[in-house]
Length: 343
Figure 1 (cartoon, helix red, strand yellow):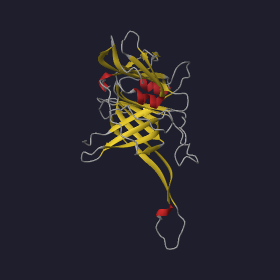
Figure 2 (cartoon, rainbow, N blue to C red; figure 1 turned 135 degrees about the vertical axis):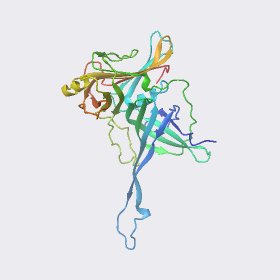
Figure 3 (cartoon, rainbow, N blue to C red; figure 1 turned 90 degrees about the vertical axis):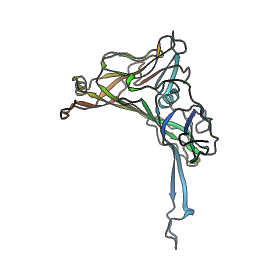
Figure 4 (spheres, rainbow, N blue to C red; figure 1 turned 30 degrees about the horizontal axis):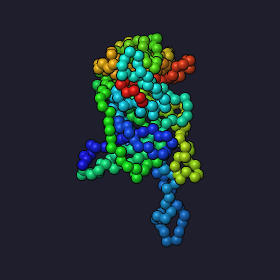
């Protein structure tokens, strides 16, 4: 027996693009919009005595699938989504911290992205069994991280899939044990100054701590292509999509306490930005669960402070993440300190 709360999403990396594997990782998700995306074409040839489009002239000429999955960010079980988004990730044991690992994710520089089988289970009304809809050849096209004021850190991932099937057996969910949510009260941000990017076993350090930021969002778009729909593939994509020039943008809201960000915007100063969420829970000997975003080179895109009718003045500041081309440096790092040994 089920309730309408017994919805599930599971996923697993595929060996062969579009060939189903049994899903075995089940994030605790907030909502999803995974759907079938068909292209129907209606014949328009004229026929005496027929004024309405004819059923015998309707064809399914193209199909794909996909949608969004929204999750809260937790300290365990997160790696599969981060690897899907960025394309690469490594997990390394932290020296001197038994059972503690740092996972480091950066945008891939090699085609193609990994593909995944994603299955969602939706219960029927009235306590009936969960019905399975399985999305094959799913590639993570983009993701958006958000750290809103007084809220849990969230990630929305968007997916493009080859097709959806309903004849694959439902995989009963199994969830990770333990872990903690990352949230606003754990966050600290540094902008500017001299910063050192994270390594395989150490978080980013340095920079000027900023105590005026109220919220933060950053998005990363792989800019995958929309080709691969070729003759002989039955109207489905015949190959994995390839990546384009990625687009990474963000936004912060800051109280206007000094002119540092204003002047950095006007002068287009190169700034490093690091946002870290650090748990109070000790793991290993002295380590803490942690989630960190590091961008070695961002440029601010606005805005100048405006009066607020007597209320505290705030700046809504967009920024673009750039590649400095510094040797051995990625434009984007996401680091996760966890007890998960593998991604």
